Structure formats: C-alpha cells, structure tokens
Amino acid sequence: MTATMTQYETIIIGLGKTGYSCVRFLAKQGKQFAVVDSRNHPPELDRLISEFPEVNFYPGEFDSGLLASAKQLIISPGVSMQHPAIRLAAKAGVEIIGDIELFARHVNAPVVAVTGSNGKSTVVSLVSSMISAADKTVCLGGNFGTPALSFLEQNAPDFYVLELSSFQLETVSSLDAAVAVVLNISADHMDRYADVDEYATAKQRIYAGTGYIVINKDEPRVVAMTRPARSVIRYTLQEPVNEEFGVIRRDAHDWLCHGKDPLMPASEMLLKGRHNISNALAALAIGYAIGLPMRIMTEVLKIFTGLPHRCEWVTDSDGVTWINDSKGTNPGASCAAIKGLSEGDDIVLIAGGDGKGADFSLLAESVMGRVHAAVLIGRDANQIAVALKDKTAVYFATTLDAAVKTAARLSRKGDKVLLSPACASFDMFRDYQDRGQQFIESVIRFTGEMGRR
Image (cartoon, rainbow, N blue to C red; front, side):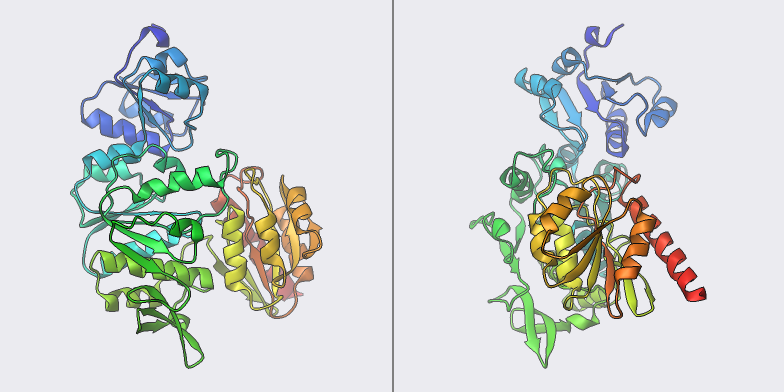
C-alpha cells in the first residue's frame, strides 16, 4: 500500500530525539499514527523499528497528499512550517503542532519557560539547581536535554523547567507557564526567518497565558513585549527601581540586589562576565516568582560552575587564558561573551563557521577596543572578515588546530583567547559540542607542547 492510499489521524514529522518522544507518547495513548522524515535513516529509526515495528515510517521527500489527509501533524523543531507540503496541509485544515504544544495540553505541574537568543541553557540550569537546593523536585529539559514529553511518563515534579527555542514556540498555543521569560533578542536563524521581527514574534509566544512574566529591562525588544495586565518582574544590569532585580555599586564592588536590598557581591559568583550577571538576575527573578528562598538561590550562585562550551575556562598558559565558548552560535552570543569577558583590548577571538544568514555588523561593533586580533575559520570566514575590516586585525586558518596556533602566536600576557564562533558548526564539525571538545583538546595539546620546550 502506498503512502497516499493510507490515511492517519496523526503524522509525526521528523525522527530525531524530539520526534521519538512523540512516538512514545502517542503509542502509550493508543493513537493511530505514522512517521515521516526527509532522511532515509534518521537518528531514531533503529529504535522505532525495534520498539514499535507496527508504526509505518515513510522516508524521503514529504508526500503532500499523505500529510494533507491527516487530522494532525506533529512537526519537529528542525522542520520549517514554510515547507511546501506542510503549507498545503495547513491550507487543507490540518492541525499543525509541535511536541511542546502536545506537552502543554497534558502538563500536570507548574512550568517555568525560558527562551531568548543567548543564555537559555545557563538560566534553566541555574533555576533547576535552585529548585533542587530548596528540596523540591524538578524536571529540566525541552530544547536542552530531555524532550518535554518524556517527563509525562513519570510522576509529576514540583516544577518543570523548560528551555524553549523559537522553532518550538512557533507551534505553541496552549502553554500557560507559571513563569516565562525572554532573556534577549539578537539576530539568529535568519536562514529561517524573514527578519529579526519575525524571529522575535515567535519568541514572544512564550508570554501567552496567565502566569508571571519576567522582563529584561536592558533589552528594548523584550520590554516591548510587556503585557500590562500581567504580573511582571523586571531585572537589569543597572541600579534597580522598586522591586526589580539589578546591580548596585558598593565599596567599589558590584552587588546583585533586589530593590534596595543587597544580595551578594557579583565577585562571589563562579560564573564570570556581565552577561552571566544578567543570567543570574534572570534566575533570581524566576525563583522569586515561584517562591524559592533568596538565601538558597544566592548560595547556588556561589557554587554554580556553568555549563560546558559556554565561556568555559580551559587552561592558563604563559599568562594567557583560553576560553571555550563554542555554544556562541550566533553574533549576539559572541558579542555577549566578548563584552562580558573583556577588560580592555585583551581578547584574541577565534570565530567562524556556518553563519545561518546572520548579519555580522553587531559583532563588528563589539570587537572594537576589546579584540585586538581575530582568527577566522569555516565557510563564512570571509563574510566575518568584511564586517571586521578596520575594526581589528584579521587572520585566517583552515583548521581549528591552525587557528589555535595562530591565536597563541598573536596573544600577549594577560590576554584571553576566546573561541566564540558567532556561527553554527555544521560546516566543519558534528555539532557545537564536537567543536568545543576539539578546541579543548587542541589547546591542551598545544600548550602542553609549548610547556615542554
């Protein structure tokens, strides 16, 4: 029987980790469904065949007739709503949702929802750690770690903490988070969105519902998303007003504070950089909204070491600090790392990769006075070089190993060599984790050899 001769109530599009969580969820409910994927052998196909041999799988080009004949499509985040076959299905009246919408329709505990261009994973990890430290149960996942639907297979926790991407939010209509935050907006995924406004509109969907909304006062696009009828908690890297979270200067030191009440010196955080102070304030605002004790939250901030590949310290060698920020996959993320870590003209930047259609002019503004040399790699190195012209010295390298050696040659005592690519990794690496790990190995290998000379 051909695909077009068969009708299904639901069709799952995409068989990666998220798609497979949808398979498990629907199978447990006894639903009748099929799975399609443009790839002949997607990552979870073997598990599907082994655990659910009765489920039909259709590889290759999407069959428009098959999709349009379904009542519901559940699309994975990596599949664009603008795909012609999906647009035809939508025109035919087929309901199109994603895994987060399915989760929202069945959720059984309060949800903390976090999105933004940068800092999402750090903030959800911080909030999850704060909840655990307060002796409450938490499930952490979504775009980060475990797919959200997998949590519904177990007993409900006190809180779900979800990192949500713009792709996931495109298909959400039922999410009513207890607390929601858009951390920041900078140009990302411009190969999928017409412009930054369209991208921001997708992010803004996280604020639908009735719960608290957390607003970053330092981000004009986020401030514009404020919904006056809602309970709002604000934070800023400036001195706060009223009950906002912010930063005050006391005895020549920056202090995190709630209103006029100082909470802790920023210097006591293991996370470094102004961008991470902002992330900490966001976490405090979220924790405050869900009733976590302030003392416990600040104790977590003092011991939280951060996440791999996010401004991760690698080593100090000959007076130079090496930092792995491979998770900096867009210009906004790299700008935040540069501004947060710079103490003057003291950074050698390694950047480049798949730019995803990004505008690198934002990066150009950030390097001035902070980056004295940039070593560029990857497919879009020339685009970055054009943007950085006259802003800093630019060098090219064909491999990451070569970039490490060039950066070492250009660095001075007191400098930081920062891998923060401002690009995706897929032109040269498996993913950003692979890129970061190869950087760490290259740095350790090279600095070790230098030390033995």
